[in-house]
Image (cartoon, rainbow, N blue to C red; front, top):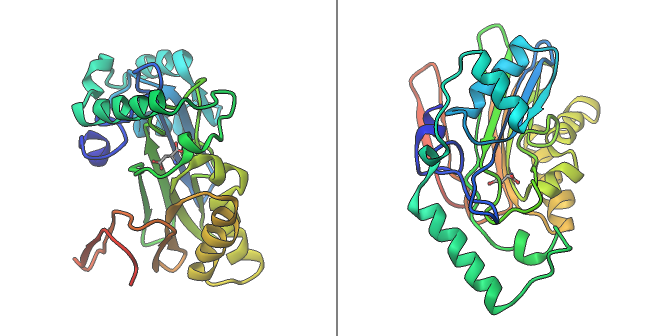
Length: 261
Ligand code: ASP
């Protein structure tokens, strides 16, 4: 919620704009001991989409709710609702205007959602968190506004369990950011978990394999944070940087932004 409430990140307040100048948010959450999961997609009146995902997980029989139905349910569950103008930030709006101007200079093919102009070089900013308790219960969550100028009610990887978020006490918890289409196609977070579980690959190597040899080879970009079942922290990305940090119960705090070297 802290990250969603900060206008600096592409989630909650500060979410990016779609092609129509609206913000549509996606979020998901998963528990590693039960594999219980919840997700919401395409919402823009719930102040904290990650709390909506939590309600779907804890209080409904479903895993994912979308759009108006999701918002009606959240209002009934008493979640804080806001006018969609709450999410406005001028920096994100200007980013949309800039991209649209570029398109006017160089019209793109709207029939292709994988058009390079849509998925090309850009900064992400989805937020995610992974945590483990002293019993070894892992939880992971991800929240996003998606990608600037997204079309057709597009939904990315962030609310897709197994793609942008995954948690399993047998292996690890993961949250991802990047070009969501590629994370969905490679079922990225689940793939990392499977490499650890079935091929006994180390978490660092598993992240590298999926980000570079699978997502990277297809043309996708992004990164993942991972906490393994023994509370070891890992991350990797195939972009220039990824804002990331951790906090341990010992009091150790680390924040990093740019490359791994
Ligand atoms: N993964 C998000 C999406 O595709 C975007 C991001 O990470 O910033 O919706």
